[in-house]
Length: 178
Ligand SMILES: Cc1cc2nc3c(=O)[nH]c(=O)nc-3n(C[C@H](O)[C@H](O)[C@H](O)COP(=O)(O)O)c2cc1C
Image 1 (cartoon, rainbow, N blue to C red):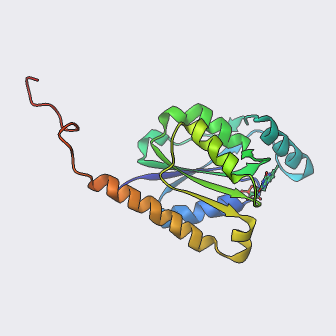
Image 2 (image 1 turned 135 degrees about the horizontal axis):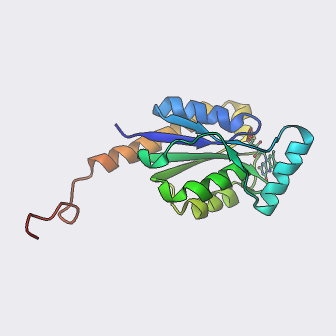
């Protein structure tokens, strides 16, 4: 069975909740990013907003799973001032070269997701196999489960097609002596 890792960061719990639900649907491992900065309260909010505007990276703490041991990694981040969160930016600078195929899960108030997705593409150097944007409305209306089920379905069908693809002659090992 294909192995899926979800790498997520969450300041106030929404992305964490979505990542945990998605992990359950995909039977995936979770790697939640932690950082040295304290982003709680008004000061934390301001520092996060500034990090988004300036494109600053966080200093990550703790141990990370090896993303190259997986078939697909879901990158889950909130939008900060129209940007990816500072911890996700730091993660991608350090781990982009080890990433297999990717999918994106972006949470936001309602604006700025497109720019953040553009950054995820650029920083990971990958085009996503699937992506989803969850707005505050998705959380408030209770559409979360449905939207995550849809994302999980798209990821699963991609992984299924990928493992069912026939081996083409150019993929096959050359005969001995060649
Ligand atoms: C500093 C900061 C900046 C934000 N900037 C944006 C933004 O530009 N656009 C937007 O739609 N939401 C913005 N938000 C809202 C968050 O992206 C949204 O609430 C997200 O779901 C929070 O995820 P979390 O609970 O996992 O931290 C911002 C939140 C913070 C803390």
